Amino acid sequence: MVARMRPHVAPPGRLVVLAAVVAAGLALSLVTTPPLLWVLAAVVILVACIGSDQLIHAHWRQHRRARRRYDITLWIFPALIVAGGFLVLRLPFFASAAVVVVGIVVATLLFGGVVVCQLHSLSSDDPHYALARFVLTLLAYLSAFGIYSAIYAPRVRSLYSATAIIVVTFLICLEIFRGHQVNGRRAALYAGILGLVVGEMTWALNYWLVSPLAGGLLMLVVLYLAAGIVQSHMTGELTARTLVEFGSVAAAAVALVLGVGFFAQ
Image (cartoon, rainbow, N blue to C red; front, side):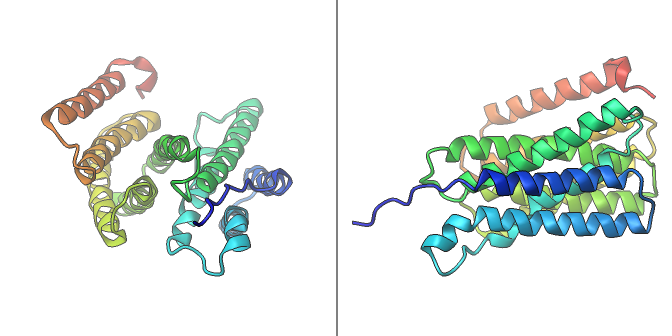
């Protein structure tokens, strides 16, 4: 009988160093202008991806010669967190030094949390697997809200903003669907469809004068509703009651956007 492999926790020191690099990159980005800014972002994102990959797979390399097939998908979420940090910190909300510091700390903690949760989500034998998948899904939606708001805020042409939203949604959905037993091509197909759906909404929002937070929340509602329906379909749990539940949450969120003055222009 083969003994169950015990989960290995990444050395805290290495994770702290990697998180410090991410925090320093985010802070430096606030005093950097294009095109050097884009070079800085690319370097920090690459370091974050490679560093998190080494941390996540340290225990697999101790016991196996070959890596798991979905390795490259584990780069998606850390990259999105860092890229999202670069974008979100430029929202008008981050006008004071204190708020900027809080934003950098939160983005860094999110990055560290994603790496730790991905480590525990590699195997369903891990005792923390279910919790890790839940936290990753929650963080995926929170990240989507921040990135959507940051992309929507400058009100650039729909050709660019909608395309960016499609790409971000596609990548986030790949992470959301990663925890389900579904063929990779099928997951990519669903993620592509959801990307197009949210991207199409961006075109409409660009003609509707709402705040960046309101625009981001509305796109998040569409993502949550569509992704929830797809997930229920993949698990065979899609029923009329499920549709009503998702629809109720979506309606409440839309009512919040339309009714609360904080989200107004």
